[in-house]
Image (cartoon, rainbow, N blue to C red; front, side):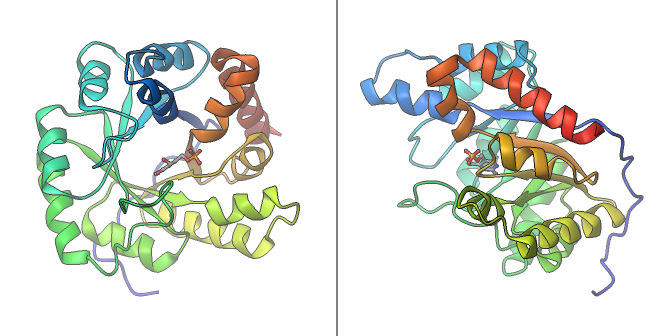
Length: 258
Ligand code: PXP
C-alpha cells in the first residue's frame, strides 16, 4: 500500500463501542400517509433513552424518508448527537453548513436504489471529494466516508481529509443472513479496519446488521461505532423501539467485552 499523504496518530481504541440508531424508516412509515405520525424526532428520543449514543438520519435527494424539517428539529431542538448521511452535492453541503450536525457521513446515492447499495468511490472522485470534505471541515464538521472494506478506498478517504471511515459491511451481513457467513468478507472488514486505525482514521461500520451479525462485527476492536437502521425499526414493530435498542446495546457491549 502506498504511503498515505496524511498519516496521523492512531486513535485511542478502548473497549466501548458506540451505537448509532438510524431512524430513517420511521420517516418512511410517516410519509406513507403524508401526516406527522410516527415522528422520527420522537423515535430518536426513545432510541437515545434506550441506549443509542448517536441518531443517524439520511437526508436523501428525493426526501423519501427524512425531511429537511426532521433534520432541523433534531439539530436545533434536541441535544442528541446527530450523524447526517448525505450525498456529496452542493445542495447537501449548503444544508449541512447552515445546520451543522455532530457529524456527516458521505454516501453514494442513486435515485432508483432501494438503499445505499455500495460504498462511495473515493478513489475515483478524489479531487472533487477532497475539496468537498475541505469545505465541511472548514465549517468545523467531522466527516466520515462510507466505503467498501477496501484499503484503497480507506487510503483515499484519508488523503481526502476525512476524519473517519464507515465500512460497508452489507456483503458480509447478507452472507451471514443466508447462513454461510463469508470468512473472506470478514477478513476484508478486519483488514480495512486495521488499515484505517493504523493510519489515524476512526473506523465505523454499518449496513445490514442484525443481532447476530452485529455481535460478530462488534468484536473487531478497531471498529468504534455501528450504525443500524432497517433491522431495528423492523423489529420494533414486534417488541417496541426501546426494547430493541436496549437489546442491541447489550448484544454489542457483550461482544466487545467477551
Ligand atoms: N450506514 C450507512 C452509511 C447507510 O447508508 C445505512 C443505510 O441507510 C446504514 C448505515 C444502515 O443500514 P441498515 O438500514 O441496513 O441497518
